[in-house]
Length: 87
Image 1 (cartoon, helix red, strand yellow):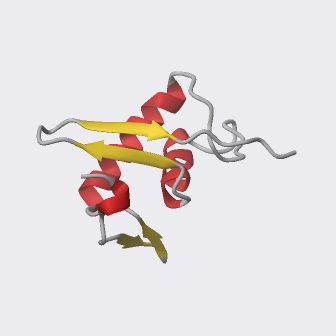
Image 2 (image 1 turned 135 degrees about the vertical axis):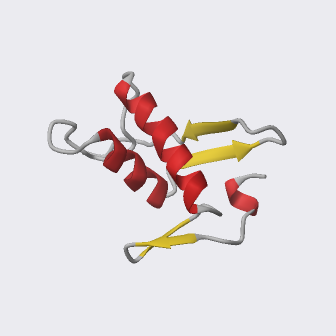
C-alpha cells in the first residue's frame, strides 16, 4: 500500500492529510521526527530553534513531502522527497 494509491485522508485542524489513519499519521510523524533529530534536513523552511521536530514532520506530511510504504508486515518505511531550495 502506498500513499499514492490511498483514497482516504485524515482531516485534522482543518487540514486534509494523505494518510488513511490517524494512527498511521502518528507513526509516520514519529519516524520522520526521529530522522530530523538525527540530522536529516527539513524539507520545509523552518527554524529548528523555534519549531519542534514533530511539528516540522507534520507540516512536511501535510505538504506531501514525505512518502511512505506499508508492507504486509507491520514495518513502515518513510522517505522524504528531495526538495530544490529556492532563495
